Image (cartoon, rainbow, N blue to C red):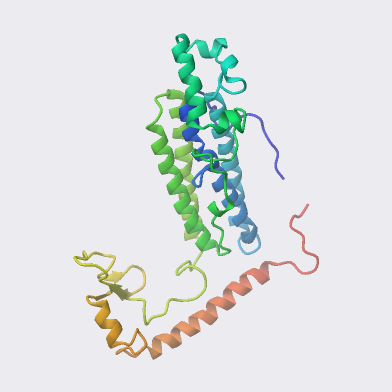
Length: 308
C-alpha cells in the first residue's frame, strides 16, 4: 500500500531557469543509474526476500519507497528548471518570472534555444513535462534492474548501484552553480551513502554470504591467478592469502604452458580428491539449508501475503 504525501522529503528549490541542466538532471530521473532504476530494483528484489528474510524485505521496501521520494525531488527540480520555457515557449518567455533573470531579446531567444536543442523532447514530445527518459531522450528500460533471486547477490548489486548513483550526483554538481540545486544534490548524494551502509550491514548479517548463491567454489581452479598480459603487477589480488579463505593465490606465470601441460586443466598434478569431497558435502549442506530456509518460513494452508 502506498500513501502519497504531497510535501517533498527535501525542500527542492532553484534560483533561476536552466533548461540545459534540467536535461542533464534527467539522468537521475530516467537514466540507468537514476532514482527510478533504484526504486524499481529494490522494490523488485523485496518480493523474493519476504519469506526467507522478512527483515530484509522491510528494509528493501523502505529504501525503494525513499527512492521514489527522491524521484519526486528530481522530477520537481527539473520542472522548476524549465519554469517559463515549457508550454508555449515563445509566449512563456515573456512571463515576468523569466524576464527577471533574462535581459533583452537575445537572452530570451537563447533560453528558448537551450530548452529546445538541449533536449528537443521537452518541447516536441513531452510539452515541457518530465518523463522517464535519460538526458539523450532514451526511454527508461527494465534492463537497468538487477534482481537475481539470491539476496546476497542482490545486495552486492545494490552496493554497486548506490556507488554509481553517488558518482553521478558528484558529476552533476560540476555543471551548476545554483546554490539551491547544490543543496538538493548534496542531500540526494548523501542518502546514497546511507543506503550503501544499510545494504552493507544487511549483507553482513547474512551468514554465510560467501561465495554468492549456493555452490562452493571448485578447489581445483580457485587459487590460480593468471599472468594474462606482459608486465603484470603483483599485489594482494594475485599473491599471498586469499582474504578470508585460508588459502594462498598460486601465480601462474605462463598460462599457455599450463594449459598445454594439464590438457586444458583436465589433468592436474595435484590430487584434489579430498577437497572435492569436502566441496560436494558443503554443496549438499548449503542446498538443504537454503531450501529449508524458504520452506520453513512459508505458512501452511492458504497463502496470504499480509496479516491484518
